[in-house]
Amino acid sequence: MNAAQTTVNYTPVSQVFRAPSAEEDEGSQWMRRIAAHDQQALADFYRATIGRVYGLALRITRNRTSAEEVAQDVYVQLWNRAASFDAMRGSSLAWTLTICRSRALDALRRVDRAIVDPEPTERLDAMLESGGNPQDLLMATRENTALHAAMQALKPLQRQLLSLAFFGGLSHAELATHMGLPLGTVKTTMRRTLAQLHQDLSSD
Amino acid sequence: MHKPDDKADLPSENLLRVLQEELRPIEPPADVREDMLERILNRTVRTARSLHEWLNRPKDRLDD
Image (cartoon, rainbow over all chains, first blue to last red; front, side, top):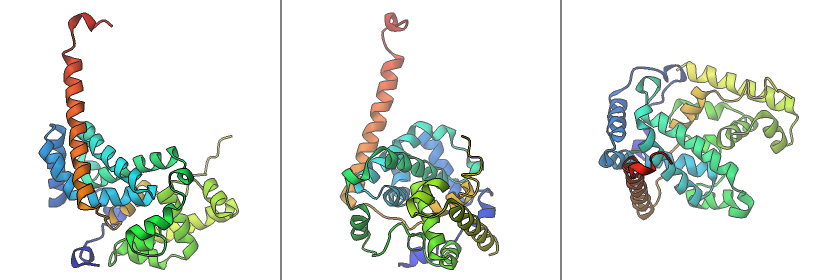
């Protein structure tokens, strides 16, 4: 963990829709320039955000090639849709990552992962050199953040269900099938997990 | 059959957004990173060119 990662400030859920910071203003300026089809602006925004975009795509698809394709699609989509970016609804990074997650889940559903990569999780483990499950939200979230602390407070089953819902886009019924759990157990666990997270993240 | 509450307790948009923003970045290898950028910029050029060509297509094809 380097110093840059330990000093990142966490944004409380309750303040997601807030006045833009100076950094977000810069993001808005990038979006305006990209909307005007300024390639240098797109390149600058790419270099500033590719680690976040590629990281999210890689964790969801668990496949390097798919993640690269998703990331490219995200920036081309930004190029085509930057004019519709609304800074009042969130930062340019949040908008970009929302597009990324949507495209990555689409890619995940399109391919038969067993054919593309028979051991995707193990390969990604090696890729990340982190050991354990790279989709575990405790490992995936940055340390010294409120979200990381909230993840630490969750039970393993709670974290696993939340991870599958986040990275796999699974519904309750799909979570129950995937985990071999009764649907009622999944619903109750998810409800308690989200209530606990909401409480932990709102009281900082 | 409608399942009214199947997604009722799934992560909200706000939580999804926070999760997305707080994930550790993973940088692609430097060569891959630059290759990806080159491909993206090439695609944006193609998009602009095809739009330009469509806007400037021969008039007798406008009614196609």
